[in-house]
Image 1 (cartoon, rainbow, N blue to C red):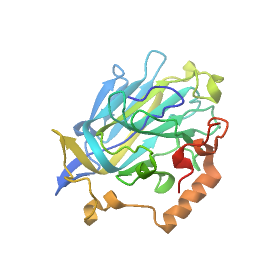
Image 2: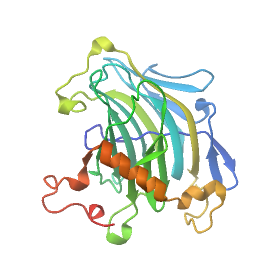
Image 3: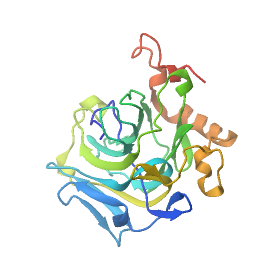
Amino acid sequence: MASMTSSSVPLIILLVPVVLGSIMVASAGNLNQDFDITWGDGRANIINNGELLTLSLDKTSGSGFQSKNEYLFGKIDMQLKLVPGNSAGTVTAYYLSSKGSTWDEIDFEFLGNLSGDPYILHTNVFSQGKGNREQQFYLWFDPTADFHTYSILWNPQRIIFSVDGTPIREFKNLESNGVSFPKNQPMRIYSSLWNADDWATRGGLIKTDWTEAPFTASYRNFDANACVWSSGGSSCGSNSPSSTSSSNAWLAQELDSASQQRLKWAQKNYMIYNYCTDTKRFPQGLPTECTTS
């Protein structure tokens, strides 16, 4: 599970599976079938006949859930509405993670802020237990006013983070250059809402205002095409995307020219931190993936 620090970034995700051929196809359905509430002592709930999942946080505890299945590659969408109002000190984490000391992880983490100040969307990628690949963004809308779609495309060639269909980050497989890439460890989906006022808002200067509690984040409309890992095997068979049908084209998907332009737009206008430009943090030289096209 993601370590709850600013250098790790939990991730979030979605599902509702139905096997279609060799691919696990998930679509909006009863969230009770796909997720287990794992902690929070009643602060997490699946309601409205399984259509809505809510996490809440008060001074005593936060809450969280995880997927029933593990996945090895997938195209996953999730709609999320974040904690409204003064959310300073709170973190809503939505991420994929494997287990063990050399775990893999793909993270979305939403850092709360004072009323009127923007949320920070924090992303990270861990491979073989190594992270430190943070990129942070503001959003071009109020993520507390309505539901918005946060997506992960994870295939053997790349990981793409998207918001409402706009790609904001791409992490390519550069194993040929000595950079490890998450491709061998099945990952489960996790999400949690928790107090991190020791670092989350302005480096911990702004503390959680518990008079605003309980804080609540909401989830709905999971949709995914994903390879389910069970009993040592994948529902997708071979990891090779050499032959892809329309149902599993995501296994070889990449950014087309229009998507590349949207990525550049998002990063130019809304990226506020990029580890690949932080020369003070890496005085011995930037990580290999930052200097390899």
